[in-house]
Image 1: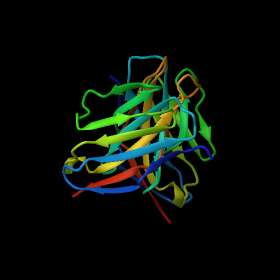
Image 2: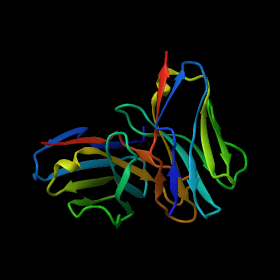
Image 3: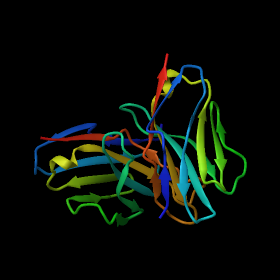
Image 4: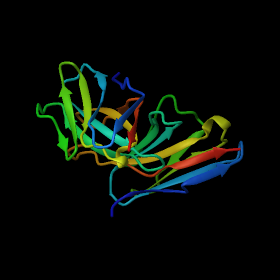
Length: 114
Length: 115
């Protein structure tokens, strides 16, 4: 089945220790998103890639970076995690140019910062 | 900027009963898309139902239906014959039409289904 896969599902890192979360998709969608979600709040968009074009939200901290080496993969790098970065990180995809534009979400990576 | 408001942080429903989740939005646009997403505990978010603003007919998907009131900027979700598996966070979402546009999510409604 076509899907959005996130690894790992759970990640524990130490304060200030860089961490990378990964996302892959088999949907061949041209847009990939990273969201941060805390405590059953609404997902907060961090950035997205439209094909190879990177789009950063204005309020995304500089601590967060992203890479998309190819259509299928996208990475979220947190350079120096703080306690406030503990959250669920959701990857999503969509097909722009299609009919409905809904987003397809991965299961998320729960990040704990100790 | 568009805003999406879900005024019910939590709702509960008896199994097999019907429940309606509210959503209102603010926009000056005439063409857009509306969505309801479901996020079960510890599971991924999935699309429940979608509505194109230019369509007057309310969308339905099996036990899920919407009441789309464009003039009132209201987009409520009705779940009929509620099942235990319907227990989840439900997010209402808005997206402008016309080229790429990001999605604006509401704050969510946590639905509890009572056996």
